[in-house]
Structure formats: structure tokens, C-alpha cells
Image (tube, rainbow, N blue to C red; front, side):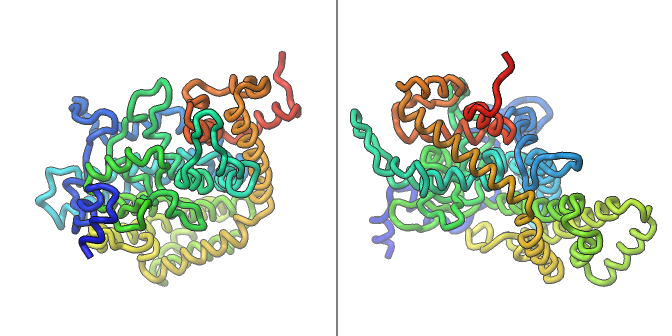
Amino acid sequence: MYKNIIERARDISFFIYFCVIMMNWKQLLSSQRLGLEGQQGHSDDRTEFQRDYDRLIFSAPFRRLQNKTQVFPLPGSIFVHNRLTHSLEVSSVGRSLGNDSSRLLLERHPELAETHLGELGAIVSAACLAHDLGNPPFGHSGERAIATYFSEGAGRWLQTYEDPETGDRLTPLQWDDLTHFEGNANAFRLLTHHFDGRRPGGFVMTYSTLASIVKYPFSSNLAGEHQKFGFFEAERPDYERIARELGIKRLPSAPGTLRFARFPLVYLVEAADDICYEIMDIEDAHKLRILSTADTRELLMAYFEPKRRDEIARHLARLDVRDVNEQIVYLRSCVINCLEAECVRAFVDAEEQILDGTYGGTLIEHISDIPRRAYDECVRTSYGHIYHSKDVVDIELAGFRVMTFLTDIMVEAAMHPERAYSELLLNRVSRQYQIRAPRLYDRLLAVLDYISGMTDVYALDLYRKINGMSFPII
């Protein structure tokens, strides 16, 4: 058995990772920065993980999230969540999850008091800020538009294309990167890639923060029908370096594939996202009158046992009955507090399984029966009444068309830069994107860097201008 494993290994690191029995907190929590290996940290009062948070808050990609769709179309007369407000809320919940988890873990492991275990809240909150940075315009519709452009659209010819001068062509794994395009992998690229004009290491984040955003730590040729994976082939060396430094366990997989155990803090980042995504969508649906007040109250009250429901009902009775939204806000806050406490308990209880890489599912799937059933009911309601509502479907249809068109014309321009129309298009692209790179794979990723970095508003405006629907003021 061991002989076969060694023979299948692509390099010696596979054997080392496979033999690791359990990850450990002391190694997992590192303030080492990608691109600044071996250099000392800063001397101000902020920790390195707080610096990660501040670096993200002040970044242009984070600001652009204010004009990217979360679920509902961007605000009209009623303000609902966009990617920016969602990320801030996820970060807030993530900080609580991290702080409460670290407190309980330090009680269990007092010998780790001098490690970074007490800083889980700072690490998780920073990772939560970054978790959606790689999402293209128009939400998941934009992701699907890019992926299907290559898998079933006009870009299929690129799978077998060979450069007549260099013989360069896409490898099967590079093709999988394109046909399974995924915002999570793109976020890791955005944070780590050496774009033109940027220093090596990209955002130069700490290893632990970077590892915390990779929800699906495997290569694209292991992506399933839901097209989830953690890093493009271009960033594979960066993730492998981080995994080696932090001692993230590598799992056995078929030859030519790469799979790691999840970095433990990924579970907390994912839980914060799950909590905010589901509960805030219910609140937004109520504001937009997709869900009635009675239905919304019933959904949120279901998270609690009878005694707690009575306490909440008495408090609601003291609120101004004319302010229905305030009642829903209070219920929502109670639910988030409940789910946060449940996920902390699930995380700490499963510490051993998480550290040995055998924990299955999400934290939400391991909470107590009553809140779990209520959460599942919210999920069913969301899919039945919210995500398929007319306004949501309309923005997905429009976004799909816009993203497919932009991907198509920009790929054509990158493939044929000598054409007059291509030159006009490429002149719009910032120099940081290596869209004239010699390698085919790099050119295509540069196109996706450019397009996925757009806001919804910018993408729509560009679509209209290119199609002659609007003209700049001269």
C-alpha cells in the first residue's frame, strides 16, 4: 500500500502531507506574509491580522463591491444588500465566531496562550471581508456566464486551439479552470497574483488569512457539477507554499489532481457567510414585500424553543407596533445570535475531527435540531419564493447576456490583438492586466481578471457603449 502511494506521488511533499496525522494550531496560525517571507513584522500596535483587515478595507476591489449584486437588483427606492454590505456583515459575525471560539479553545489548551490562537477573531473577520472579492458582476449569474461561455458557448473552440507559431495550447487542467470558473478561486488569485505594477505576493496577506478564504481546497479537475474549487492552476504553487508553511494536511487523490483538508478557520468564515446570506435575504425579502410580515415572523421565531419564543414575544410587544421593520430587525438579531452560538459550539466540539481533516459538511449542518430545522425552512423559502422571484430572475437574465457578450468580445480581442477593433477594445484595459501575455492561458485569465473586476454598473455601461446604445458626452 505504502509503496503504491509513493509511486503515485507527484513529488515528495505529497508523501509528507499524507503522513501528517493531525494539523496543529501553533503551526496553522502564522503571521508570515506571502511575498515577504523571512521579513520581520511591523512595530505598531496593530497585529498582522488587523493589518490584513485594514489593507482590505482601503482597497479598490473592496470598494467596488458596493456596486455588485448580492441577490436582489441594486437599490431603487428600497435599500437592500449589495456585496459590500454583505461582506461587512459577514465580517462582523465572523469576528464574533472567531473570538468566542478562541476563548473556548484557550480554556481547553492553556498551553497555547502565547500563540496566535487568541487572534482568531481578527483572522476570520479579515478573511470574511475578502471572501467575495473574486465574484464577477451580477452574482452567480456572472459566474455561470463565464463558465458556460467556454463549456458550451462561443469559446469552446479554445479547448483544441493550438498557436500556429509556438504550438502553445491549453492543458486539460487549464481548461477545467475556465469551464468551472468560480469566484472563490478568483478571490485567491486577486489577493495573491503578481499583477503588472503590483509587488510580488499581490496584497501580501498573511498565510493564515489567505488559507481562511479557500473554501474548496482542491484543483479544478476535482470540481463537481456545482463548479466549486479553490485555486486556478496559475496560483497552485502559492497555495501549495501556504499549505506547507501552515501544515495543512494533503489528502490522497487521483494522479494529476490536488486535494487538501480544509484550513480550520474556513469553517468559521463559511458559517458567517451562511448565517448572513440566509437570514439577511429573508429580511430583504420582507422589505421588498416578497414575504409577508406574518410569514417572516414565523420563519424567524422557529429558531427558538417555546420558552425563548415567549421571551422574544414579550419584548416585541413592548416595541412600537407601527414599526414592523423594527420588529423584524430584532428577530433577525436574535436569530443571528442563536446561530453564532450554535456554530461556535459545533466548531469547538469538532476540533479533533477538523484538525485531522475528517470533519464532514458545514458547521450549520451540525447545529441543534430546532435551529437546524428552522434554517432548512428558510433555505426552502429562499429557493421557492426569493431566488426565483421575477426581479431576481430578470437581473440574472440580463447579467448573463451582458457577461457572455463582454467575455466573447474581449477573448476575441486577446486572441487577435492585431485587428483594428481589437486594438480599440484592448486600449480600454488597464495595464495591470497582462492581456497581451505570450501564453494562451495567461491571456485568457487576464481577460477574466478584467471582466470579473468590473462592477455591475460598469459592465452594463460598457455593454451599452460597445453596442451603440449610449454614447459618451463629447
